[in-house]
Image (tube, rainbow, N blue to C red):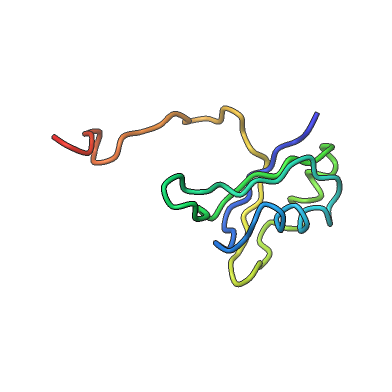
Length: 99
């Protein structure tokens, strides 16, 4: 079973392939995905990496959390599949975009 990591603070130029290459330094990478905006196709500055084992996931957190990557400080942590306080909120104080 793969162990998913959340990667925040990615440089906007980072590709999924580059993300995979970087995290392979900590162990086996099952998948690496940079999250993109649907309308523009630009990076949103975060992504997810699935490491092959819990030990490799822990090693990746220790190795990369707080490290600089192309001028941006990475935030690396275990991803919660359904974390506390999840769920989508509404913008504009709970009102939709138009009213």
